[in-house]
Amino acid sequence: MKASKAILILAGALVIAAGFIFYQYNPEKGGFPYPQCTFHKITGMQCPGCGMQRAFHHIIHWDVGTAMAYNPLVVLAIPYFLLFLGFQTPVMKNKLTTVKKTLYQPRAAWVWMGILVVFWILRNLI
Image 1: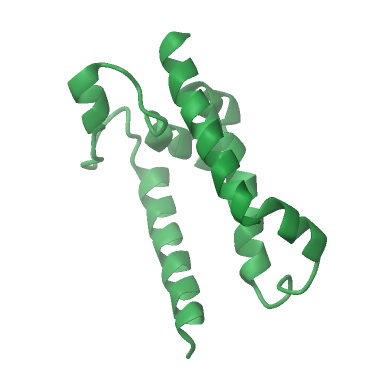
Image 2 (image 1 turned 90 degrees about the vertical axis):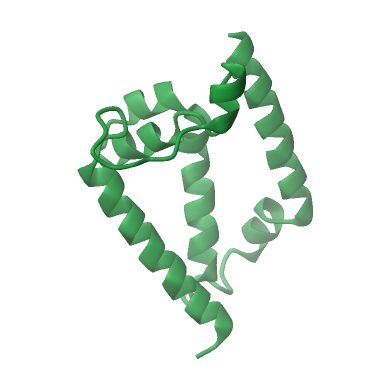
């Protein structure tokens, strides 16, 4: 088995396990020891990931509006990352190459970093 295939299988297993935990246990009510944001504890401000666990919980329960209220960046990034995973499958590997090259070129990481920084600043100002 190739290393990339093993990584995809491991990633899939982790997503399924995380999905089960987020489906079963609401981060707002406890019941599972979800990690807390150290940045928020120290500064009182929200980092780009604050609200992500609650957003995932609500996405899994198809409550996208509430998920957007907790962390809109996570909700909007999910289709981008799902498409990336889709391009890793044998069925999609050689399809839509122009889309793949445009969305996942090296500059895309810098665009995402810029979006992340702007989101981080705006969510603490608004």
